[in-house]
Length: 203
Image (cartoon, rainbow, N blue to C red; front, side, top):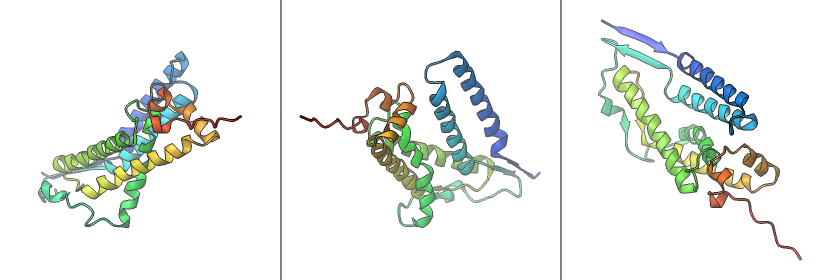
């Protein structure tokens, strides 16, 4: 028996986004700290970004079982040779996780370039693992490439550098600090390199 069908991103992510929007709206109505105004908008923007990444990397799920399934062994879908096959096509993977450089605005753990880089690498590993799992379970042809992980991780580091520069500017830095979620590294001031530069001493 052959089975073949597709599960689109909207079918799964649409209801999840709607449910999250309802939760945010309830929190805003109750005046819950960190879930009103710009913080609520920032949280929903983050969720939209996560949904966009998943729609690119995991969805659609093309599920195929039976004679029409891809019979290539899963381990043939792995490319563990770093850099040798990397080219300009890696640029989209750099850009895709560049927003993870904003993690200090969201998480208390993102206190340094090293931690942001590690968290980005972890996120990339989760994406690649999901792609491999979908291939094993659904035969949908996703591959795992170490170069994608390198490019993703580089994107997070570049994003952190850009955030660091932005936080040292006047209006933009103030806006970013205002959007930082309560309990985040920026809000707590625990990310030393991201603290505002001290005002010059005069007189």
